[in-house]
Image 1: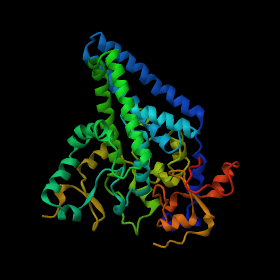
Image 2 (image 1 turned 60 degrees about the vertical axis):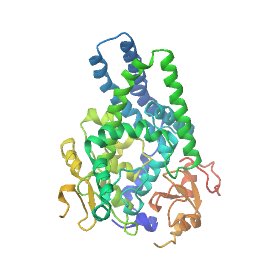
Image 3 (image 1 turned 30 degrees about the vertical axis):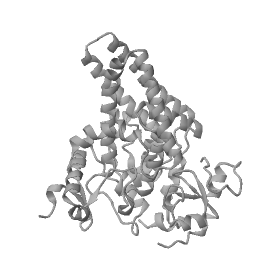
Image 4 (image 1 turned 135 degrees about the vertical axis):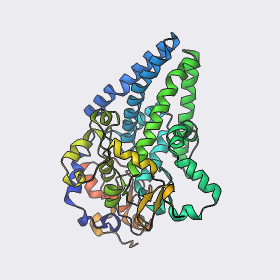
Length: 338
Length: 69
């Protein structure tokens, strides 16, 4: 592939890339259909679970329902993700409103998340532009040169139990309550506005159903959804053979096709995750709505050529911790030269 | 990096990541990236292309303003 992404010579862009532009049009019908089969049932399910919690139903039943609710919450978050790319509704205002609502439901400040996510799209796979909206990856050289306490902190950070367990919960429930370093006033305000709205909702819950039933219902749904969400984000850019390059060599097309995975999931999981597994295609054309991604994939042999990750093969990503610039591959802490 | 942006982009470039429009010179001054979100030229589109999709948009856009696709 040429370095068309860097030089700006548009004529070097492949024809199939231009053709993908046809799938970028969002439409209200598809968006409303998606909302009515995910976010609306989720609200109904929340109501049912709250009813059961206040009537002291067996908590095992509520926990079982929370798995379904978490699936619907993850799918709703994909709508927020589309909205942030301006691809869910045709209207920016509708996208912003939806993004804010789903943001509150997931404890995510939409404006700031959008800002950091766009930064991620602008810099994914670029070793010189890490740090905003991504999962921290150290190179072998950086790790070996780091002080011992930084190495230990990084090992903790990359541990699966911490990253997908406590880490995801701390990220969404605590870290997202404050503006990120470098955030602009608009993004900072979105954090405070989201926080105030969450506080108001919690206060309303205390006054109506009570804080205990509210937390018994909301907490497991959040914890499951956050953990799965972080896992999805992890496997999208952490896998064997992943593309990383320095700024001077960074190529948009290579970063999209080789630095973003195609996570092929069973159809049910693909539905709950809103086609986000087609992540290489999403990075190529971020304005294609989730409800058109499969169609765009089916029509484009160039994106079909990417070897998919499967639920089984993706588990190998858990052992990848550092990027070895010399060998151009991700390695485990255990593979570090002694 | 070569900061001369291909003239086929026209005078104004629309960023498909953030939707903001800036002049070619502004993109070039930001090391060939979007001055708002840092997207690379791969995510840039000529303003004329966006105008064809939205005929009501002005021939000369307001720099630093967000426009929808």
